[in-house]
Length: 301
Image (cartoon, rainbow, N blue to C red):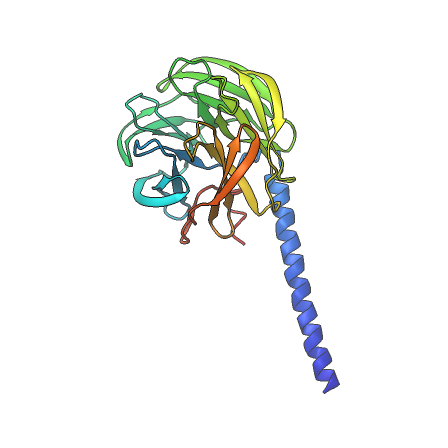
């Protein structure tokens, strides 16, 4: 009897050890991949698709390449619609109103050919498309924003090898200028572009996935003029900062948090860099859907 109990306990201990080792190895892989200089994920796309003045979620299905829009009222899911399916080899790099028709459009990027393209949308329907400029080797588009105040969205590019950022000034799908931006510190990546200090200039929202630390880099055009730490995200490698937008309509950008293991989302309401309140957001459905591509699928364990 004692031998049987001892054998049962031994098997239990072995099973627990395997589980712990598996978990440690998985977290080590996540850490290795996501904390590398090249890892600019996870990022989510949040913008107002239906013109009600409130930001919505853009979802992506990794199995079918289908996109979908979840219409929100603050942190509440009030409706949804399927969007266009992305072609193989292309990834969604950003959303902005490139042709200034009042509807957000898709910025697509082909990592193999380095080609870009714009898909012009009317809400969730693609109505036209145009080729954009080809990016030089080593650079990828990571955000959009109007940095030169001409009323047209520009592209924020990032070089993983040097951690350098750059701005490409755009007129619709045509590049009309370019300049280097600030170099990011090691371990940090851009999770959003928004005017946090309300001086009329878009700023960088940065996140360090290894520590959960966030930071705001205040910009004047391409020049960093100040910086401040933001709130620390709890649960390293559990919750991630993935986007910024003004959800409660107070004119101040807020944080979108995402838990890739469960699909849960949360809104952290900010006043500049200070966390003043929180609310749970809708949970992204299973079946391949994601709010953000987390480390190229390393949440799928």
